[in-house]
Amino acid sequence: MPTWESEFSTPGSSARIWLVLQVDLVAQEIANNRSLVNWSARMEERVNASPYNLNGVMSGNAAVDGGVWSAGGLKYDFRNTNVTIPLASGSKWIAHNADGTKTVAVSAFYGTDSILGSAALASQFDLPAIPRNRIRVGQGAVWRHAELYVGINGQWRRAQAYAGVGGAWRSHDPS
Image 1 (cartoon, one colour):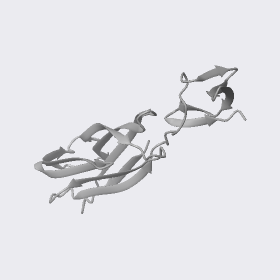
Image 2 (cartoon, rainbow, N blue to C red):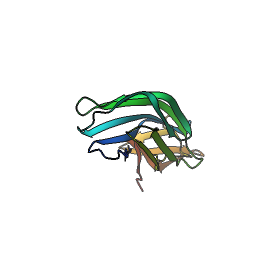
Image 3 (cartoon, helix red, strand yellow):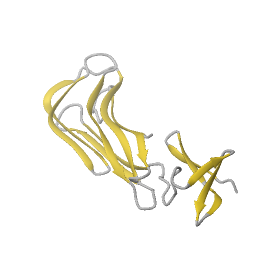
Image 4 (cartoon, one colour):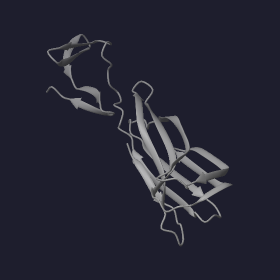
């Protein structure tokens, strides 16, 4: 799943510090038409030239599909080498549209009046679509020789099958 990055504006410094927001798909529920994602926001030092440390003056926020984390009075310490500072993380169920699709908006910000400056990002991504209006196996359906047959009005018919593969729905149409 996607990761977004924004470099901090650090005037007069060779330090390279980034704000990173990552979202990972954990599960999809076909029956409830929703997806579970884990998200995390962090700061990463990628070039060790930063003697920066500051306590209690920073603020930050992150949003994933409207759910917002926000905090003030944050601190940072980049005096060691290649530091990663976790800011926040969580899990969230995201409801899909009636057709099974979903575009998710994300954003993050960290900064205030310090020598480190600030960083912000905003973007969007599509979750894998959830198949809609499908008959579940076990409700009038049988598998025979790797083909799905569905009982409709007393007749068995071959049907298109969907399977979750690597976080995405793949179809197999036997016709």
